[in-house]
Length: 473
Image 1 (cartoon, rainbow, N blue to C red):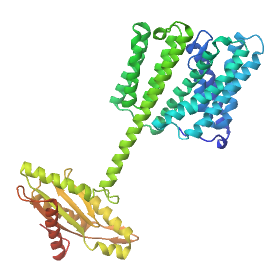
Image 2 (image 1 turned 90 degrees about the vertical axis):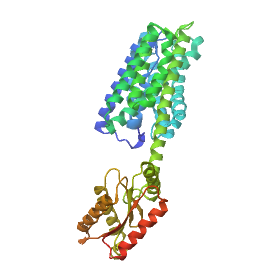
Image 3 (image 1 turned 135 degrees about the horizontal axis):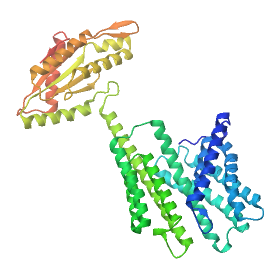
Image 4 (image 1 turned 120 degrees about the horizontal axis):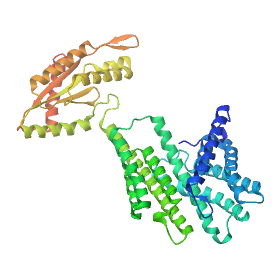
């Protein structure tokens, strides 16, 4: 999820409509959180989803979104404030709404500062959790706490715990929704179909996590500790969107069950039970998020290594293997031929008068000739044959478990097809021919890769000396 700069997002009619829709979602999420995720005393929602939605709104639409966040927060909080307070209801509601808008703006500014490309790697965990979530929610919670205490909403004796709970509940909304929104957006952009195996694994783990959550509240509290390894396994094996959907469902289900009974989180007092539950949820989310991002780093490293190895062992122009790839394959085939007592054939091929193409028409034509010839080689080889560009205009073909007669027929067929090949270049029709040397590796004779390559190279030279456009075996 790319965090766009707030100053360059125009407030067009379409964006205004989207902001109204997002404000409605903000309001509904606040009512949803109060209905399902709030516990007594204080009726504070244990997951404040609007914090995450407000951050996403400002990241997507810039600072134009802040007034919409404030308005949605004011409407969402007004009923609850009016039900508890008797004096200065509108003042305290306005302060709370402005504070929520400030939190969204601050979190978005910190996100752009520390994570302009969103959550991409394991190293992003620390700045996201501490630099974005905790800093912005701590600032908002301090304002909210002073506002609520001055309004008589809480007693000063429980102030530190209320303040801490406000920080954690607001942070949970960001920790849940930002990775979820980022993964769903990327999944929608990439549109990569999920395989049957992936779908089965993700569905099974989803059922397992929600089922163990219910069992932890209904039967045995220890089941709650089995959810973490199941989610971490999903983070390693599953698609990231399925990871965060399952995580959000598990966390939401846990809090919804705890709203009527603390279950495995029951301690001596309701305040400590609530803090215990929040600590568990916070730890669960951070560990799963960290595992998924770390797995993403590992996959990126593997892909980078594979890409580097491919570039190191393949010719960039023709995409055939190069000498460093071909020689070990040749040596392995020599050993296999000795074990199985089977011969194989090796061909070296040069493009006739290739230097003349470069001198007369430039290197662009020479490169085109090389690419066309490499493509023709691919079309004429079996799956077990190996072709490589050894350097310049010299190519090698390894014919495993192939006697001389069959290999010679294959090279002759290739030579005749090259004769018929025409290349269009700047209005000209270009044709060329090839010369080849071909030798057979006989098991139980003393050979090295350099020796057999030298023998084939001598045959290639003989083909050129005899007039080119021929195969010497």
